Image 1: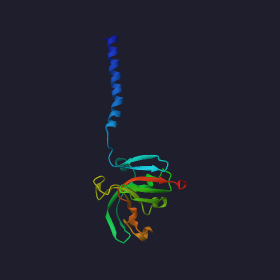
Image 2: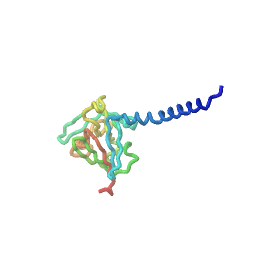
Image 3: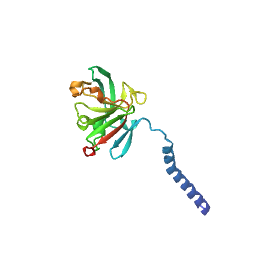
Image 4: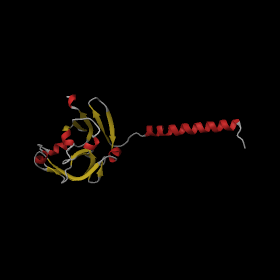
Length: 181
């Protein structure tokens, strides 16, 4: 049975509508997604930035370890199990000499690349603590230093306060290159 010209045009229109729908539906659905969940911003001094979501972090090199740090008074704080993205791996393809960590409360800390790539004291951007994940974990994304034994003392880290590196509620990492100074 041969198709008439009218049937051919009808099938062609239907095919066009289906093709158009197949192309537009993903675009419309993407536009309806209002919130991709918890995320931080990575930015360089030139103003280039990208957003790194929690879901994307989970697909990168992560480390889970017990951890605790010593504060400026010699007290040990925030002992628990941390899971996070290894900063050295996260930033490996980027050009930087130091990173400024910016917290939502305004706290800022600049960390030299040598500390970030120090394999004896892996630094992570933690998204989980003792099984509780951001956003339920109220400290939010957090920088944590996780040596194999889990303890980072002031003396070992050669800092007045090893705890000052454990930045809570991280919202942004700004990458600097020495010629930016």
